[in-house]
Length: 401
Ligand code: PMP
Image (cartoon, rainbow, N blue to C red; front, side):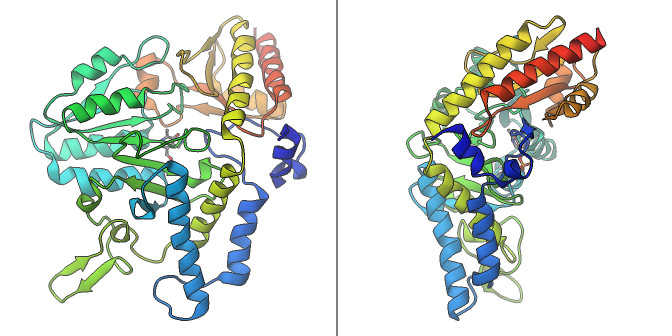
């Protein structure tokens, strides 16, 4: 499949052919197939699920439940029973922090994270530790942005109750050695939570094969709709994830004085679900399954390699994150130019990038930076767009120097 074919799948690029969209780590664009799936649902299949006996409701229920199985297949889970639908990665982390971990933590226990985590995979663990007296252990990174694995391993012990790590850092682009981390965790019988927000679109997750305990991603970063996401829970922990938000649609029996809840994933999905969103997220997964994801990931990575080369020749420009195992996310800092000014300049050149802390303040504080400029490449980006970015940053440097 050529670049033109892929770009042609995304209506935003025919509407605005000049758009150089390099903010894919924040959210991806949506292909026609996703928009159409949601539009068709609302036009032809709209009904609430689970409670209706009429055909329209039964069809909506089937579609919603089929999505669970499609997504299970996509991430290599045993079954749709392991997939809960959430509003996104943030909610998925909160669910596990609150309804699984909090009740198991006490003084003397610890939770292991690292300094580069997104706030979504940092604050929920920090808060349950503060509330229970457990210790939040924060591993550091080396000068390239890779985890200090010797230190990381030393932080894990018999009192470790959770290890939470992103598959890919959204600020540094580092690909974390999750298989090694899972082996370290399981040696002390601690579960691992993988934040796959940045990897789910283009990396095989293989949750069963890799013995992942918990995993989350957001639909909007895999070409699906906003307000959708998943929480994967392995069979080992499935009956230990309690309810989170409570109300209709997630119960077995409600008495005047007590309620019996469904088991996971039913016990998570209180209230009317984001049915069209789940259907859109399923369409995004089906879209990805029809592509050669390895080839497209390699292509995006190759563009990023060239961009890093081009950027590193610019005086005063520092690449933040140069680990040997790195994805197509590039962060940089240009001496004397505030990241927001840089992004504003690039916007004037027709290039959409993100500037700021990228929800990783502990990381930025540790690096002594107020922010970075971040460009992130994905399946529809082109070599020319990469070149355009480098040229525009050179112009920015000349303008400011
Ligand atoms: N983790 C990582 C690594 C992310 O990049 C993001 C989104 N920037 C999140 C978690 C949070 O995702 P969401 O805002 O979709 O819940």
